[in-house]
Length: 273
Image (cartoon, rainbow, N blue to C red; front, side, top):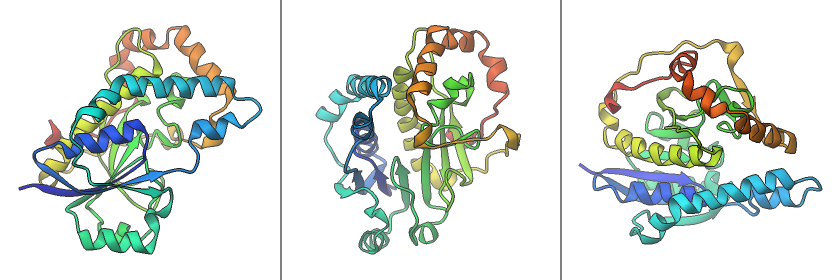
């Protein structure tokens, strides 16, 4: 039986890839996708600041590698995602909340959208999945696959699939993955490859949703949890990150991967094997 879903996401190329990929599945019907369009992109906001060279170059490189990974697929695949483009933040409006409730999907999937603050949290409790680019609770908030490189914690780069709740990346975890990393990778190659891997796992999660088993709980040291905000993404932190790559952070991680990963255990759902 087809799983009927609604996707709430952004409108950058990685988000377009995600919705179009899921909508191409023979086992999923995307009833509607709500694509939030911000007034100004992150790059646009940073470029009006006086000191922006490192961050601007970093984000321009991210845009280029997203095109390298996703542009051809997005251009060629038939779009079955029933996309509606809405101003960022309006997903919590009464009109859209009522519309989503009437569509009554089996599952709602949120990826890269505004914080959900509406009655949808209660109406679809247990059927509302949030995709957090980062490994919660180790890293929560913004740029959670950027700051692990600053802190020499490459093992904390990944994706968390969780039941959404009222907090920020605090819902009950369903499953987690780390990216495939190879020697010579840039931060953008790692990030985009992770998004591709996330989409394939998300498809499997949706299709098997009603059969998901309870994953084994993972106990973490509360003192190791880190929360970042947009203001923490600075010229200084970008410079530190690129120096880490120049100094061999990827090679060191790959040479000690098993021991390093063991310090940060993941929640694994056996249904997704």
